[in-house]
Length: 189
Image 1 (cartoon, rainbow, N blue to C red):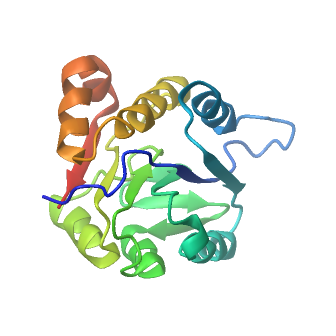
Image 2 (image 1 turned 60 degrees about the horizontal axis):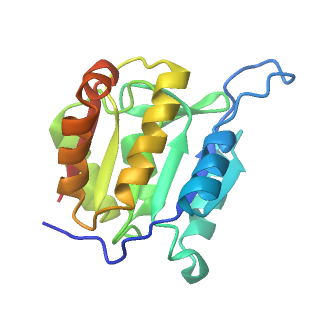
Image 3 (image 1 turned 45 degrees about the vertical axis):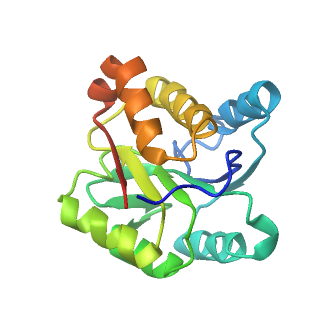
């Protein structure tokens, strides 16, 4: 079992467009601001509209200056084994190659519908390729508000434990109905 090196885990969030109407202001940034103000969780938030944006920001995230931003929160539309970035789809294998071996002591959370609706072997391969401490997300279609609240609960719980299995246990114990409803999955090495 791998254990996080630090208790405090800041958030590096990449977010896609939720709506094609540019006047729509939907964003997970308000939830991140709430966590920073009320729980002291620092964050970086960037919007990604293209696969190139995604690659660019993930490359920057690998820099030493961002080593304390150990939660990668990917807030996009999702489909089984993929996230939708603009008009393109990025599957787990392609994303794993972008992160190739750079995620030691890091947690990757997919705040997207269905992305982890895949065989456990595919998620294990993602973990092995990225060297991530943990990967988590949803296996079904999710409600935006409920999943945003759950994401906040997850990030806050990640601050309480170094052992991610304890986070998993805590979420299943304290938020069992939401875990089931959102079909939340969490895998770790």
